Image: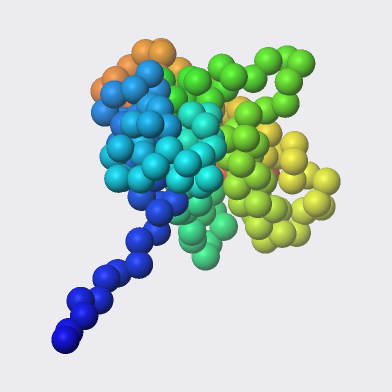
Length: 183
């Protein structure tokens, strides 16, 4: 009797992929625990266990997009994070807006925003170490980089950038960020 070996299934990854596809194809209104469960052939409890609710699914999709970025060179890593952030926003514009629409002045940043900032802060820490700059410079630099990146991405999504030049404009912003960090 022979057995057919099955490849192990990464359930969390399958759920994130399904949520990302739904977000990209249909937007956040179509995203639900039940829909993601159906897409992967799992129970809703599996979705709740691995990702939580709808907000948790959106957070996981962004976290996965940013977590996939890895470069030895800190400058290439920072640039790749910028591209991943923009890529997520362009593929999921409604989810991107929703990510920050959940925050209010009296509340904390949503988990997806906090994780994005953590990824950026880690990248900036590597750059500051390479530049032999003090650790106290990390968070202000990270906030400045995020403000510039988030600003250009938000302008792009709002139609505030000339469509023909938006890729070059984004690269220019990344160049500007690097020049600013290098001093």
